Amino acid sequence: SPPPHLAREPPLQTNMSGFGGQDWEPVVLRKGPAPGSGPQGPKGGTSRMTSAGVDIRHLEDDDSDAPMKLPTASLDLRIAIAQARQAKNLSQKELGAKLMIPAKTIQDYEAGKAIPNNGLIAKMERALGCKLPRVPKAK
Picture 1: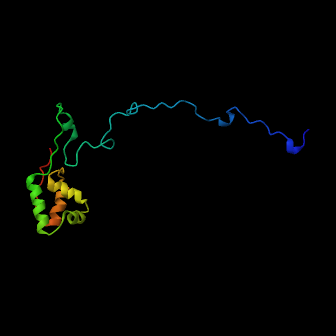
Picture 2: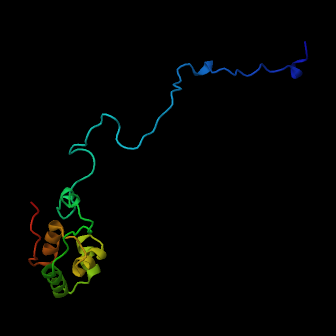
Picture 3: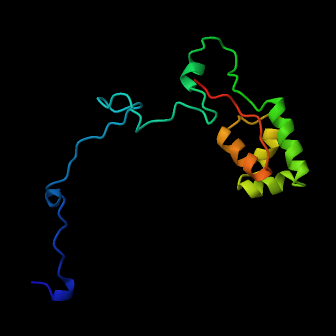
C-alpha cells in the first residue's frame, strides 16, 4: 500500500443518486394567461377607468383609426385657476407645493393639457379659496 501522503482520493460520484427528490421535468413558458385562469374580476387585472372617470372600454370600442380624444381642462377652468392663483400671489410652483403635487400638473391644467380630476380640482378650490368649474361626472 502507498504511503498516506500519496494515497489516492476516492473517485467522485457521477450518478445523481444524491438528488433523489429532484424534479427534472421541463418548464414550458407561454405568453398570455395561464390556462383555466379565466377573466380577471374586480380584484385583479388593470383598471378600466382613466383618472378622469372615462371608461376605456368605450374608447376601445370605436372602430375608426382616429386617435382617442380624452377630455382636457376647459377654457373656463384654465382661466379660473390662473386668475385665482394670481389673486393669491402664488406661482405655479408654490401652488403645487401647497397641494403637494408637481408644478408641472398646475402648468398642464392652465395650458389645457391635463385630464381634469374633480378630486384635484376640489383640493385647488380649498387652497385658492374659490369655486372652480368642475367636470361633469361620467355615466
